[in-house]
Length: 461
Image (cartoon, rainbow, N blue to C red; front, side, top):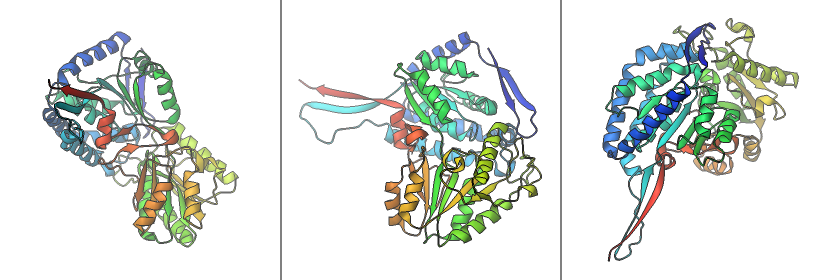
């Protein structure tokens, strides 16, 4: 066994510590989940969805305690509340349409004397490995539809937000969910790899870094375990000449700096048409300079600390490298008293005179920084947006929906937005391309990832 430690980004204190589970306890938990799932799969979808609704209500009741708890664990300011609005939307959508999405598929042409259909069967045990940046939302994406689809779920939450797993467990324990069907386990990285290598689960749903995703894939090699990966990103935005400039500035600033830039689909690079470039840069610089960096427990704080000092140092190094290569930082960091040049507190930054030779424009930052480049036309913007190893989302600001569709078809990404960013619609598949991963969550397609097709060809004599 080893120790899991959550060090608070607020003051560097140990907020929570606990020992990981012993191997025998882990194996027993998974075996119990396997037994519980065999019974759960026989429960009708409507009943499963009803129990999930009870989970939602139990979780909402915890909101007053959860909001400051998130701030202590990963630094999001309490003024923004928890993640409950989007969480409710995802739970409600996946519950409402579960019956339709999981219904048998009937072939369009009939054959006399033969009944044919395809059923969606649950996979068995879904192993959700959740990250700390949106600790509730990222976990909900797989946990809720997995249970509704008839699976058991094992949750391993990030050390930085280890108490979130406890909240999930407490909420499910207040529902009619059968015992052992959902379990939160305290696991080390080695424990996690062993579970996958030993073929103990049927699907791994992992959200995290690309390098960690590669570890997951290596652990599953040869086991034929299904693996879904949502990994790194370097999400771009393009502001066309016909964009609503004020709207673009306001929304892209939020997309770049909300949650201290620690968003899977946060905006990390912006390409602006030359006719709007100067005004856009002035506008986003003004917004970035207006943030209040400080203790996230203070209602006045609009930008909290980054969850981990080592991640903040990566962003600092990117900014420093870009400046040494000719980039210009526009925000006066000295005006942000909480930014001491080290530690978790990092001021927002906007850089110009950047190019794709710089790490800032190519490698994931995952912090409150954005680089802005001037472009002369759509083709140049498309080329630059595609010049990345990642592809989760891309945002296009324009008044021409046909142009957005045309550009979107050429951009290598999982989701295309027009006039918005940093958003997840549960009716659409959440997926990525290139080094951002594989598989999908949410929508009808999310249920397809959590089940296997089984065909029936029944001939009457």
